Length: 106
Image (cartoon, rainbow, N blue to C red; front, side, top):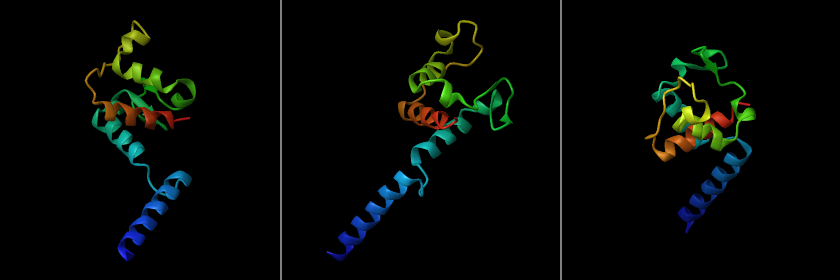
């Protein structure tokens, strides 16, 4: 009984911590990893770090999450003369977490 109480307590603390921002958000961390693994910084910058072709600062204030996903999957559908590489086969979790990360860039 004692171990289940400890487990419940840890679970409650994790939820409270995530809600108020004390614990790292796994989805956002994974989104940052996807950004790195897909080499997005070769063309895009965040806070002045990365390529200068298209800064992403403020993208979370300018676009809705579905628009960001469309830019990632099919950039030419968003802008016909886009030179951005399309990522049509990016796994759904990667797309969701990358989008969640980009949405934090206000």
